[in-house]
Image (cartoon, rainbow, N blue to C red; front, top):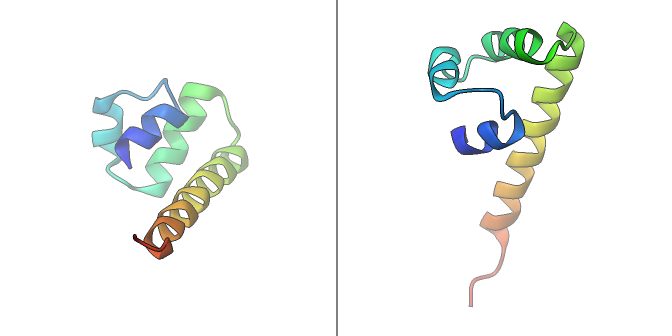
Length: 66
């Protein structure tokens, strides 16, 4: 998911992603800092991206294999 996070939010470096280490609150804070989001915007953005990512993963898992 780290690669996806970097593609979604290009301003996030590997060091930043290591520091937040999957912690929702930390990631929201970094998005506020780097992108000027409000807390609500950051939380909405994270939820939207993670929900879409999980839906895509689940879709791939249920895709018939030939």
